[in-house]
Image (tube, rainbow, N blue to C red; front, top):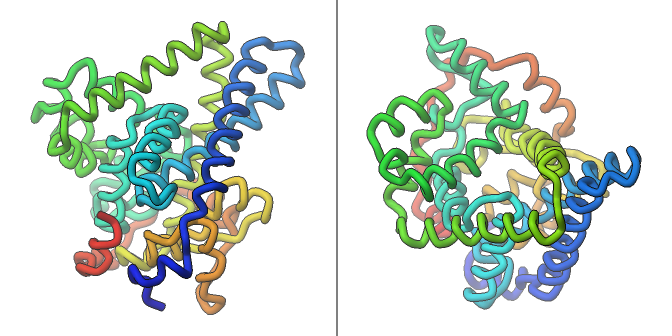
Length: 318
């Protein structure tokens, strides 16, 4: 099935629904941060941490929609809410956009391979990268990268940082893309995110412990899906992902993000319609089967790297 611009009528952006979900999840996420910091009792802390870890993924999915320009048909509103959703990660909208669109170009390539390794001499590095991802440190690299770009831009742009520091984490291609982006725009957005987070902490009297607990839980939850939707799939830029089976409630909280193969095939289709495009003939492994398999570690592969994506796909992810 080919998705072109003429299909905008078949898959209209659910703008009102997106705005409603965004505003409500922003408010609930803030309430969770306050609840955990207030520490009324153990159960309120546990509830707040758990809810925040899932609400953060709803907000991230909305950020993902904004990155692809399908959160709202008005580009300005799409951008504003993209920036607001990025605040809760926390990251910059343009920072994430550069990284994510780069992912669509490099999916299942050697530089974005966490489940396999191609060089037996780099087995340790492969294990290090995978377990950093599964344990939440992959999430941490994003806000840390934003802070480095804001506060230590010369270091972020240096050859030492690009070739030595981030290379071992497999993040060099993303950093190479970021150094080509508009530095002023990135710094303004990162500054906005930092200011918003500081105002949130000050105005609600959030504790460092409460804030960290919420974000550690979110990091683990977010990182769990970020490679389960690709691991052990075919090494193909477009086809290298899964439509994962998961409980319907969880799938809706993540705004159908588990239907990731459909998204890679049709990146301009809004989240609401992804279930319609699932091919019943495609394998649909369960999320948990892939996730627990990842903890066993990466495997050596001789499967060749994917070819460059076609022009039609690149037009869809610009």
